[in-house]
Length: 338
Ligand SMILES: NC(=O)c1ccc[n+]([C@@H]2O[C@H](COP(=O)([O-])OP(=O)(O)OC[C@H]3O[C@@H](n4cnc5c(N)ncnc54)[C@H](OP(=O)(O)O)[C@@H]3O)[C@@H](O)[C@H]2O)c1
Image (tube, rainbow, N blue to C red):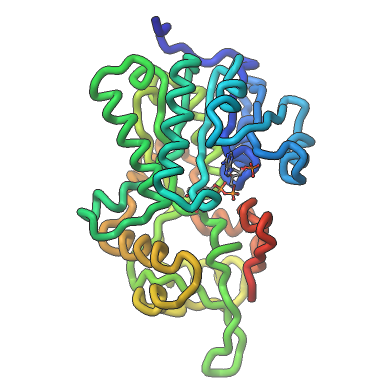
């Protein structure tokens, strides 16, 4: 019933779920840049094709078409899947704010893609913090995706042909770009009265593992272009892993702007009263205690141009200012503040 896996043909249509978001846009830009002359056609899934983000996306290329729908609405997904060869799916925890709903969305999109016999489906996942920490550290925006990944694993283990022959899991990591939004460094006076930018993530002396949005896009193109080595597999990616002290020091080295690590304890972060503080603290504690396991040697073999934090700073030209990265923050009118 399911044909043998072959490479998607040039001109194939890729449905991108989460297309107008930070990750989706980076994936679409990488598909448009793809030098294998695949000339992908992109169907960008959005709840509102008239939003400024959707319009900006559409204006990037005549190869992009917008399609309206909602991850909660099966009918709209079915319609969006008509004539689609590949899917890249990044569901969004923060809009629905519910682990159960996000997992349901992922399972729904997968099942409808299986029924539509999509040739290559890439599921954007995150680490299973709850399971790995033996239930100690729930991180719902990670665990929701991990539950969908676990479903994919179970189907593959049972030899279900579509999951075995047509899916790839891409386990990503926190973006470098979060420093431009959620984790914007704050100016403070040091003991000499000079202004320094302070990076304040509660990671003590442990490493924080991150990925460049550009690298996510690169890996998605790689996966679609290399089904023989990626189908039926899970690829856990990241670009770099550094202590926050190293991050501050590299920032100073590249920009010439004084920066330090302002060490904040997990308890202080947890009790800050900020929205998402409990979940964020659990994630930081998880990364401190369990780490985000990534094989950088293997990743660099696959992608020799993997961006280090230093090379990302050089490439982006970021000088510590606030940048609009996540669509949701823009929609809510939230700008990372100084
Ligand atoms: N920040 C990080 O470091 C990081 C790293 C890895 C993974 N993630 C995960 O990425 C997800 C957020 O994606 P992002 O970073 O691209 O955020 P974003 O820029 O805020 O984008 C959110 C995207 O989700 C879409 N969306 C939200 N609810 C939807 C629904 N019900 N139906 C259809 N589309 C919906 C939005 O589309 P429209 O508004 O156009 O409908 C938009 O494209 C989160 O779940 C997060 O866990 C984040």
